[in-house]
Length: 153
Image 1 (cartoon, rainbow, N blue to C red):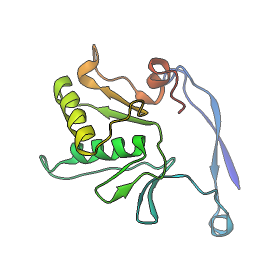
Image 2: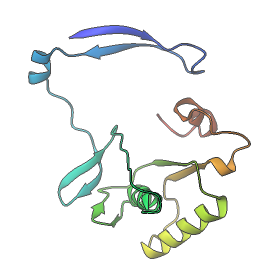
Image 3: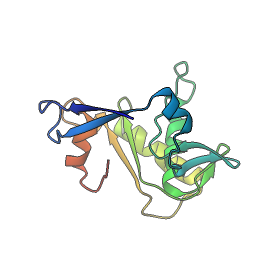
Image 4: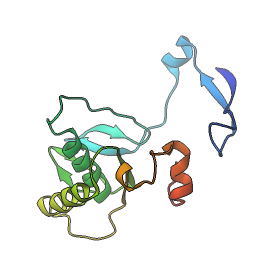
């Protein structure tokens, strides 16, 4: 196993720290056992999105990317199912929106909750929208910890 020292420059984050970057040789990678990650979204019995995964959705304008992601965020946070996906259990979700107007976001989530029949309160979904900020969205890798202390990133 190879480790590299990697220091985050203090100007990049108020939470700068010294961390170690880990690399595996090809031989080590072939035999290493990685821990299972908890499934957040599944299709049938196959985990399609797990803790720590990053995803990207791309399509032409107007196809429904935002509707799709808002639906996935809501079912992951509520532990429900829709569009062939299901959340085995509720999880905390942070959804960032850089485009839509406040009222449109509010109306969409009201409609999604109604259509998905998510009537219970306390769904752990936090939405951060550019429209609600006084300036540009900050770097969310550290700013969210300041704005929303309950987030554990």
